[in-house]
Length: 214
Ligand code: ZN
Image (cartoon, rainbow, N blue to C red; front, side, top):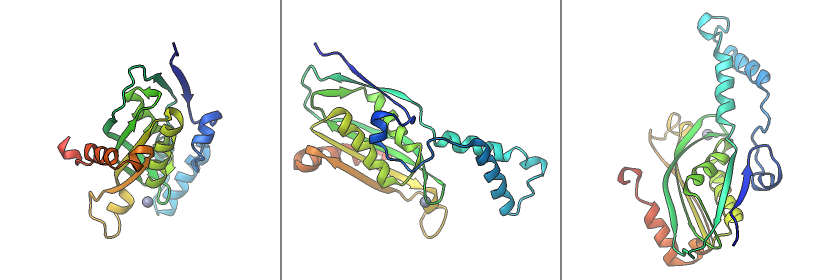
């Protein structure tokens, strides 16, 4: 009998993840420099950085960015598909947040993930961790979508994978002409989810309901 397989994944950049995520984000955060930069930013914005109410702000800003850009390591445990399950497995509306690399403002929303299992399956709770692994980075939504799908493709070697993200970008909804609440949709489809019309339709039907209809 084949045992379960575990891959420890972290942003330390060893082995698989180095291949999985050629990320532009800071792999090692210089906390002191981050605080100095936050203080400089406040000063450039015309704030009195020595005011009592702002004294701790650079440290808080540094804390916040460090947290937003640091995914938790996790064990991506996969299991043999012993029962030969051959239907789509779909996890809908996994919440996530990330940081837009163009404006350093958050974007947030939900991820819908589906895969058609091959030899291995993954615990459903791990799908959220996979999303977080790539979301806690300086990102654009398109690349985040592609990275999640690519990770599942490599780790599970499924017969098909679909990843659909819908997110609100604060850099769009708080600036310019975009309305508050406007959503950006991105998708990455592989294998039978892309190439087989029925499977693709099933995936889209299971995931395209709005979050209000959960
Ligand atoms: Zn942006």
